[in-house]
Length: 478
Ligand SMILES: Nc1ncnc2c1ncn2[C@@H]1O[C@H](COP(=O)(O)OP(=O)(O)OP(=O)(O)O)[C@@H](O)[C@H]1O
Ligand SMILES: [Mg+2]
Image (cartoon, rainbow, N blue to C red):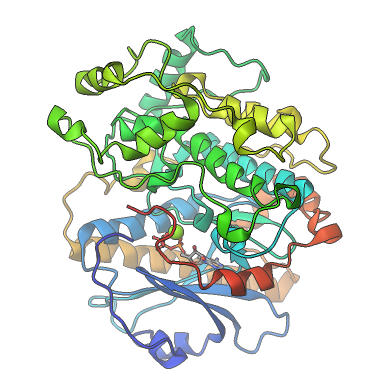
């Protein structure tokens, strides 16, 4: 999280639950400390007295209501995740009730437990096979396809936000910067992209046209994974998530044993030094503000086609003024990777978003041809209502946001109660809503089981240990 002054307390179970209602404190047993960050800390836990051993991850957000922007980020995650239901998207299982609902400052969110995240895995000495990469990448795309069908853009995909279980199941987390695209924008842009002759997708007939949002902000995606159109303050589309996917995919390719790289030498594809919020004022278009864009151009080359699609004149002028840089062959950067992986990267790493390979195209790409068990298509039954984030443009003060968070706490508590009751009665481990959706996703879930991890598990536990010492800011966070 950016900018918030966070409490610096010792990481003990006693401190962790300080401020939680007494009965709720007894609900979960903390098992191990998973990590900490600017937001607070995460503990692995189980339900007290439960014999099934099911683990949860409890994320405590310290001083959650210090700033309205941070509080909104949290509310956004609670609201959006309540509507998403996919095997590769993290679920919120519960939110602990604070002692005082009118005046609490910390929040405890209970998630599905997942062993580690890709940042920790990449920072560990672990190698992974091509089968693992196929499996992980395909699940990431599957999650993206589902999210986009729900008209949700994640906007902050980076290795730390891709969780990975020991059995190699991916769960995308951290929806704090996600957006719900409203119907009008979705339709407008569908038309716009259908009319665009630049759309030269060759692989699939099932592509979903990306929407655009009217929101323009540069504080969106962590900089190393940030698509060029975000740096250029363009309106953005689902293509921003596809760009971020490619950046993560490229990092995974560095984990192949054939790459013969020390784990310390695994680098992000676009490790820009800085990407300050760009101002449209031309004088601010100087170095180092555009370092991230320069780093991108050193790989994909400066634009060779018209940049007429860039809306802001200052940005167009800047692009037109650049000395030409040729595209670096991706094969030179990833010599140990198969041709299909290089081709997939090439198709995604297009400067112009409308020329970028879509999620569906990527899933149909020959890179995934040899996969034994592909994820089945699972789209949202309906888009998430844009009113889900109706607080977004309000100038609500923290008190008002806290009241909305309390409503969410009650909603999740109801679901948790229903879920536990069902579990006792039916032996199921899901809540009513998820059970309903699982009928459509059963095939997806079942294909998730025979993962390549069974054959060559990446030993996430060891990786987790090694990765936990990684620099907390080593992901290009702005
Ligand atoms: N369900 C989970 N199971 C295990 N670990 C988790 C889980 N959720 C989060 N984590 C760990 O905590 C870290 C931070 O979680 P998350 O990304 O949701 O928080 P955040 O407030 O957005 O922090 P940041 O700004 O650093 O992204 C993740 O990178 C991951 O290592
Ligand atoms: Mg995160």
